[in-house]
Image 1 (cartoon, one colour):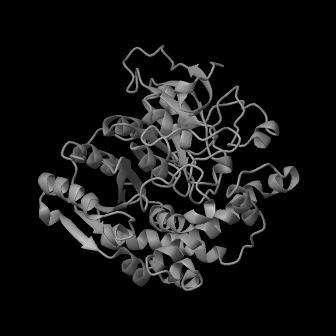
Image 2: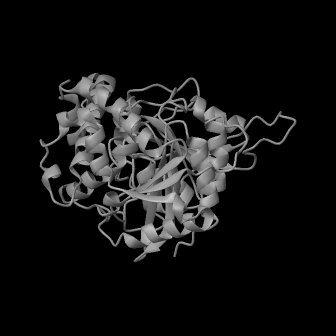
Image 3: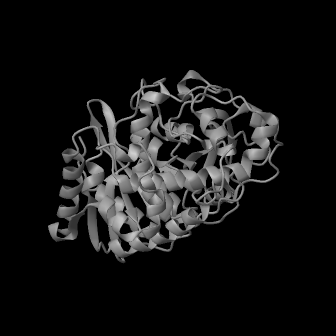
Length: 428
């Protein structure tokens, strides 16, 4: 194991080198690129630590490597180590009381985002060309936004999660980070097993106006940058606007089981239907987390950090009330959003409701921010659609980002669109 240094930004759990198979007679697509992996992926010969020392102590060395890691190795990339993550993947903040909080290269006094914190920081700090992470409730999209890089959450179930410690299987995905859309797409072509490119056939770009209104900063700039770029590439007739919350409420019948019973929902600055959506997602997430890890948590009683400890125990002690409705809701939302977008439509919304919070912010003061964040993040989470977070530069010395979503299975369309869009984006 290589030694860690202060120049690593606290991103790595351990550094090592896994070389690709160099016996191939032709140039491999990821040749010469380096990558890091979140400490949730099995790598042969290493313990998968899952962000917590008690987990690491009670689990054995992996005897095989996760297929997603093998895919990029076999495509020519070199692995440079395992990265720090939030404990048991149960946070979007990026703080870890045991291993330290990776330093956000864009804003050192701000959190890097989690739970794939080290993976994002490794890319943002130029310590790797790309990184593998996982995204259940936002764990690739959030740190990508906070660290000013690209982050891709693929359509649910498309990339193998074998050899990845589960969090909640209804939402778990293997995602990835890159500093530019070309590498983002190159990695995507391997993990998604995509064929050669086709020109982007953009049906429409739909701007979720009510979601942009959730921002705790002026939203017009984010929209203006995006709209100007799409107008330049495809023409203004391709751009439409919608109230996503009203659309979801009108077209997802099972949502009624989760509406009106949440204090956050009643706040005037939230979108009730999307708060209800995130409530359903968290309910199912807790249920599946308990099934995966409840027995281990009860027997080991691990030392867990603030905020995470409460969430883990809330999950372990949860019931199965309304679980069937959650599964129904997933199918209804996927169908409804599929109808909204059509064959080649893309939905635009903020990734998160504002810039990254300061390190060591009291968890209780972040509750409203978290509620808004999960309202936005649950749209792709519950529908299983693919989503990419795109950096749009800095505002007041803090990174800002926008997200694009496409139908389940339209990952190639989204990656190609982002690459085309990047040529005309002019973030300040």
